[in-house]
Image (cartoon, rainbow, N blue to C red):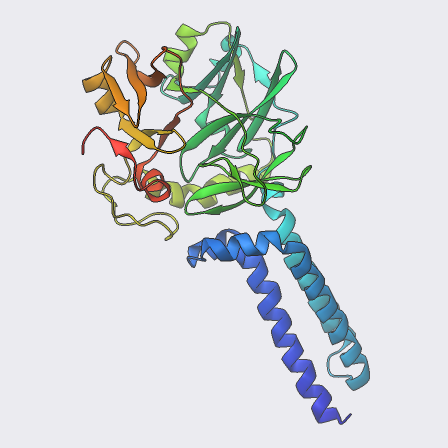
Length: 366
């Protein structure tokens, strides 16, 4: 084969490697969502991540073989190219779980007296009570790990959190496949997908549905309140604390602060941190922090102002009896069924995220 032909093949293959390697890495990391990568593309890349990695490796091997025959690039450049391909594969599969280290199996909990030396009174807390066991999760301490686990009477529970959605969801860690090992994977439509690396399952947090299987974890209620309220109401509770002891932690918080500023700014209704939301449901301000309940064949949402107005009233939604309970002393709310049992609501997430995923949601304001 002529050198000119080999050279043409070499550069064509090199370009293809760049497209596939960079495209697959960007597609399943945050930059891809900045470009508005469609969710179907992200899910396809997740499902076929091994195939994509194998294709990248085979193309790189072919490039090395061509280079040995045509002597186009020096070995140093080929070594750099090989390293970049390897980096792309690593980013596609492991970058997020390295940046955001899961605490499912090694979370640290402290008593209220210690936590009170760390937390301000207005810290947002998510309180989970299972029997007599009470766990409290400060929002700011979930920002990096996103995941924290614990065990009560032989049952493993896991708190999952998405900062972009401002959403805590608590689940039983065994959702039909035995022990799980959840890690942060990627976000789509401003909501995280978690990867169970033990069972090779991907879970969309807001729906808690598996992408490639029929498994769906059982959700456990949590209650949103301030630290001042939680400290008073649950003096014997255990508080999750993340110590921010890595240099990387401070860098991550700084890097994501601009995105969070956009999410929480009620005057910027026409934008989200990542341009993948519809932003067309005006029943609430797009940045309103709402409480959402997924009843399976229907969804219901309310705001804290709704709770103050309609507290104690009973509603029939799609045949299910619902009632909002409101604690006026500490200004927090939760939803119960007709038997008075607390329901697992999505507490304090942005309306723009909830309404994107559940556009047919029933609300109290039309």
